Image: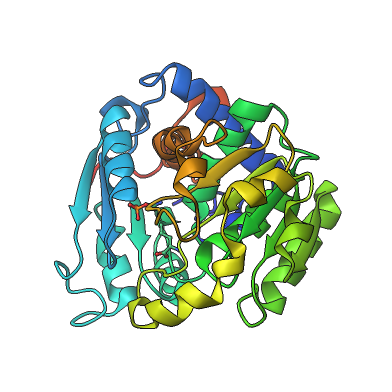
Length: 337
Ligand code: CP
Ligand code: NVA
């Protein structure tokens, strides 16, 4: 690895600067239109072929979109399902990273603690991508922003309201990725289930750079009024199943239903990362209605993550994506193992 090129990771939404986030989204738009135009994992691009895609929690979209995206770009996704690897029980994250970085081009990991991803990245000279952890789901937000861009044009200046469990990974990522794009992000949930002060402070700092803004409230109506985008997520995230009954009561005033949608802009679009629980966080007539863009959002996981992988490989000096322009220092430096 050249001393002048730093390996880039994507562990949380703010790991991309506002300009970098825009660059990844623009690349995603181009790659959606021309799905095989960027081939960082093909032998002649200099990148290694295999991407390790590790799951400590279950998945449909993330698994399929990464596997499909890597194949589209000339690579091979090695999907490791929950319980299949030694990581975390027989072998430390640090040792796992030191083994994987000798063989693969990128490490994609869905896990619990964000600290694990930080440890993986600290020990890896190939990019590490957060495929969801307890605190963030940044790949989902790239797909969400791509979807909003497609339906609304410019992201900057739009108002996005998120309702429901506002202490979960999706709420944090809506806040951080939304303000990075220059959006006005409003988060509404009950007392005790709002984003941590540290996340709000990070979002406010980013909003000060981009002209976006942050509103955290317990009043769903305050968040919804005139919003251009309305988003929600399950009230029971993976690992919280024992709290299901209590959570169903806690969040019931934050459901995205027809009454909620009356408060938003008449042309508002509705997002949900899925899986969705109709009749709880979102009404069936909303998710299956004309304002819902959730199927575009699901498809855009593929396009956004392809762009992200290509961008990280390029910016880390591990493969060349010609349309992205030069990277400081020599590239590529990390050929097939
Ligand atoms: N939205 C999302 O991450 O879906 P999966 O859990 O199915 O990957
Ligand atoms: N908040 C949800 C998102 C699922 C994609 C969870 O963590 O289970």
